[in-house]
Length: 164
Image (cartoon, rainbow, N blue to C red; front, side, top):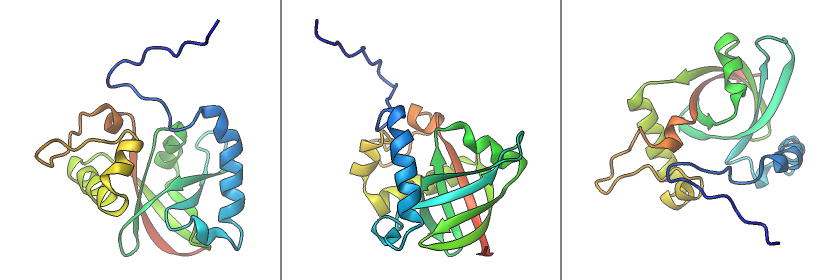
């Protein structure tokens, strides 16, 4: 019997790769971003290290980022790790091969989210946004903040504070 894919309702999405693949991909990305070969991917990816709000343990995960302006990065995630940043906003980044300190802030302001999405489209192209199911621009170039892709993600601003 052939395996049938489940029906996907409009407005829902699947992760770009199966969740189990992150068990392989994330360790590989961590290794590469910590290596002398980081330049292959570090223009778009970095490592963020944060403290668990309940456990106090230190966690590191690779994330994509956009440089918004000098000293300010924006990232987004669908994963629940962002909740740790509310309790302990101080983070350490491995950014383009350097260890850098930063302070994270969860962004709720619609204008800031729009600015981030526009910058992301400018830097990575609207095609990239579509592949990430972030095709949130309407025919007039406006951004639909009620789009499910926006609603399920948390947007995080990181103010860089210097070398770690």
